[in-house]
Image (cartoon, rainbow, N blue to C red):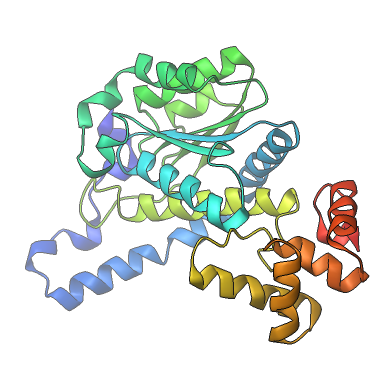
Length: 294
């Protein structure tokens, strides 16, 4: 029942929210937001398990799939989309699904989240495989659309993760790994796009970033598989080469072109003093890890 969910309870510190000044409202929001990292810190073990599941999926040629309704689904899509330019992966490697489809991204379709069959159908149409990892996201922890998706993922044999913002969440019962971030009452009762949404965004960032690092998408703290799709990212690519190899701008630019604008290859070419082809072979032998290649 909704009244039993902490995300649906009234926040005693904001009972007179409509009588507060703008500054008081902002300070109240800020105070509540400050509690989110601490709540996440208490669940690091389960987040680590989710990261390991994603790494195993990537290594087996599988995918990381987010699925949710409303804000939860939109946050999954946001994280998935950003993996393409940041880590140079195909849009098929990390995918996000939203109840109601992409039309619901900009126009809320609240009723669609109540149908578990729609969650199942979404993953059926995506040709879900046992090598995939499915993360069902629901602030309330009870969304039927997400439950249907997790049930189907379990049938297929995929790894399953439930991300919610309530303890004892219903969706946790349908997942191998349960991440329950207890964010508590919102300043505006039930508006889980606030603290709960912030918690979900942070956790999804952690899972995608840590799992990509786990399959060789970083060297030091540099995003060496960045996809240079605009002028800013082209310049960032050159700076990454400079930082990784300590060469000047002109040298970085030269090797960036010699490496067919592939940052990892340019770094290996410079540090191991080898050709483009040799660098590619060495990287492939090291499963794409720059540090292992060196």
